[in-house]
Length: 87
Length: 419
Image 1 (tube, rainbow over the protein chains, first blue to last red):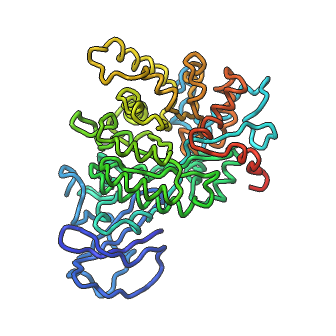
Image 2 (image 1 turned 135 degrees about the vertical axis):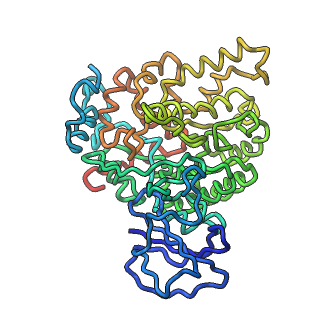
Image 3 (image 1 turned 120 degrees about the vertical axis):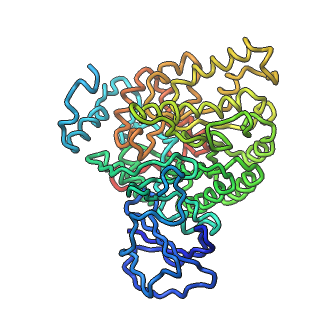
């Protein structure tokens, strides 16, 4: 499965630089850049489908994050869903 | 007897259902009396240029390469309060994600079409194709936004990637450079940029502004586009309008939705840019333009020519500007149309003098196309044509429109055994 990680900036889900793009299975340390308010992990469960994603805010982030343990089935805080579909 | 009455489809296993619905692809009346053939590997095979193929882009292409300010707006999957997953694209209605499992050759078509030129050569050899015009696959969503600058940013990513993959194979595998036309200065800048790279053809959206359409929107009949046409003419670039690139093709829901959306909201709107260009005087001002509708079929073209001329004559008091020729004359001189299997269009080709305008395509690897059974599809639908007409429709028209070297392609055919 493809994985992609990028930093969130501000408080509306805007994305800054990305720090990981690959097949997963790696364990790496990344310093949190100044101004980052969170991180967004995308994954592509099937080729051809658009990416699922999970957001983690910096102030809620644990010391260590396992991407496969993230909840991709939960509604996310910065949604583009139309109002009638939003939680 | 209708398809639905022939068998109890619901009683079939997924594999049997795939075989059942694909059985028609193998049917052929044969090619008795044909001087040349559509048979892969045959020494007497026609030059076959598929004017419409697609490439599956890497899933993370745009998210890796697009400017940071646009990344959070890219198409993605979201989860609602009930745990239902939705595909979210700015210009589409949200679509529920379905767990769609394919079997048999339906599954095979879903797996091919990748961005490996060597693999594509093998697939084309198997179907008799000598050269291909390539359009995006997921990238058809690049135009699905009301923001033309966001759209242009996605197009830039695709164009750079497509050239990296296919630039060294451009004599045979030719991606069209994708342009978002809702912002004319950035469209011209991107055309200039990719023309320098070496692109020799463009894909423009069926409407410059994404959406259902309004008389307030920019459209190709208006003189605001003259600088764009001047740029395209100066670079001598053929340009194309692919189906489903101007508005959300999923406008119908419920019973019959798949059929309604395909016929009415995907295919039919492709006529709009063609009529815009043939009726508005653009081609009097820019006689060097040439353009094509892609994947929309050809059966409607004779009707459209008749309707354009009828409006120009019968509504002469409303029709302006006055043109140097009839709208249908501009079509025959400037316009082409790709199709997969369209017997009504073939039947009317000679009567409406359109033998130089129609271009066959297998739409590889899409299910509505004919891969890997194009030979049978061609034999089914083109027996009424003579040898020269078939040669034009199967390859020579596309070679002329897109600027392929037909002589080189014939002298350097893909070897079926070693591709």
